[in-house]
Image (cartoon, rainbow, N blue to C red; front, side):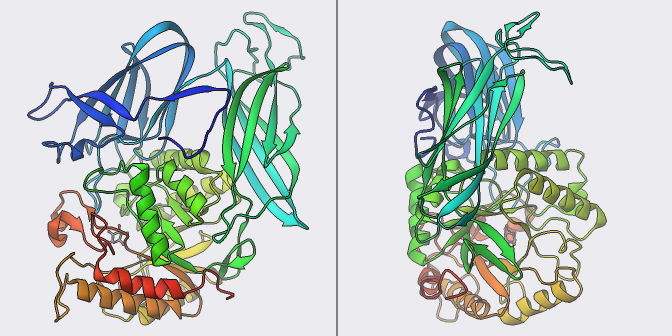
Length: 585
Ligand code: ADA
């Protein structure tokens, strides 16, 4: 399964995942042997490959002819794609999609090979042994699409504001004309080609128009002459009426369907799902449709003993059902962009999402890696392009607990916030910091967000610790007057270890600590909410400090790795269920 709704009625698509591929490990005792393995999937979940690091060759075949687009929703960490023996693409980044378009494939059966590398290679700035497992393989879906010479690559719909039942909306549709298409005119910079002109080498120019239908209301673009590559079509000042606003309590979703016409002929389409809502920042509050949010959140890694990070839709839905049961209203996708199936479900369930780029705990020296900025920015671009329309995403996050305490680090934070704001002005952005009295970046985000572990890593009470941080941010940290959010609190507890003395790692102590953290923070003036670290216990990489991680797991989950609730589950449920979703209630 790729998405929870139909994304095309005209374009022919089919999934190449949801089936066995032939996988040949390139390293270790089974190097050169071929195994049937499910895609999507993670190599580490196969018997005998629990600690595999290195290259894997994935192979399958497909029948096609003409222009074909292949989209990979996630391959860890680095992928090289070959079609019929020829390399056609490469991509770094486990958690964002990439695609490749192939022109004029001859009819017949084609071989698709993906070389995937999950090693901690020096060239991969964002992947290193960490406090979570970075799994390997084709871990998200793969799609094959038959496309014409020009196709729609994205539709971004922005609900701007609502007045008297009418929403002002802006939309952007990206139309890509394949380079080398016989019908696409070649333009040189600054050159104007009149409609109907013939390009000397390519034949008649392709003129096209887009019909956009949002929530059943139709808008038509002007005719444009396509140039090879990207052609942006913008719809300004759209007015849409008769829709219900998207909110946590009423997660109303509508179709946004773009159809590309060449002359009278519809040649391609792209269907997205949108929700009508606004997210704004006012003083110390983040407002959803004008109402101040109270975040009752949980951080979640994509991790499961059976599936690795490649959780099937049913397992993702189960996680979200547990969060709903707890009374949580928000999830933080620590520490990378998540599968679109997860985001589709959050849209449908009315769960707010903090989605963040892929970077956990890089000190300034690691940020000086020559590829760090480029690779972070690529994740941001791909994340926002792919996830722009999800109404559940209310904030973009970057650089969890990275080097925000040096001038060099600050320059990276500033550049990444600037990039996000250039790509999306409709949501605030933030970053989870832990650099108390050292952070140099609190003037940059829209929301000041802090991770803290009172009663666990710190001896202060939660009220004291949060007050100390807030006072410092306000008076010395340059973050005065902004909303303040606690992006991590938590404590470790090992499932099944009950202990009347509440010793360390007992479920009892974990429940006791969470109760104090959440109760104290929920009544703290000026704090707009909390995210619990974390939803489930997760596997961690082999690294020296995993010595502090019994069972090689980060055991701060409120359910264990198999989703069995610990004592703390009930504690959190009692607190979260009683707290309203908005701070004006
Ligand atoms: C940090 C970090 C998390 C996790 C946590 C912990 O706050 O953001 O990824 O490592 O600490 O368990 O110590």
